[in-house]
Length: 283
Image (tube, rainbow, N blue to C red):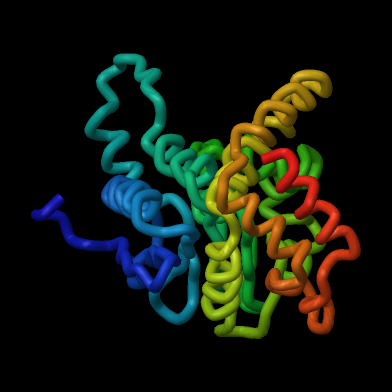
């Protein structure tokens, strides 16, 4: 990739990887090179970070989705009548995010439409500023979602809302997107990246194995039949036990853990000493 223009940036800020889409002149439209570089950045973050943020450079837009000019040019070059059933590069890249080893937070603004919305919905936590708007214009373009949106977006919106967006070209505001479960946070204009970084830094302090279970195992459990989901849950819990987890539990019992709210820390659990003595007897 040394000869390819760099259109995805990567920065490590402590335990948080910052991955930026950098095609502002094209409203960060997604082409093959961007997908390659984005996947490369995500895999690098798995090795170096404990949480990640995906954002866009430029002042106005997260991503206007598929680069239609690029897609049409490739279609014309490849239209030789031969069937192609290989797995989509879009699926590979967005699944690398959705099934990542670390949690990803998306910082959204302006246009978050089509493939841009598919990218956003591959992340685990989404922050929109008040300029953000959402749309799925595939019906008007004569195409279909291709970045896992039929799974990831539909999981958040449900069939009826997603079909409405695709069939009618309806556009949702940031506030409507929050009500429809597309995003979890809405912040003032220009503040989505700062909020996303704040959330990612907090997430990075969690036990890594628990974060992995939340982003990789929990969605699979949610997709499984009831009994299979309970079975997987019974396997995941013991599999992520670690010395770090035991230390964190003891800190909670001792009252030295980070408080969930102001004023709730610093007080030992009433049973802390009894539990400590029981553990010593077992040893």
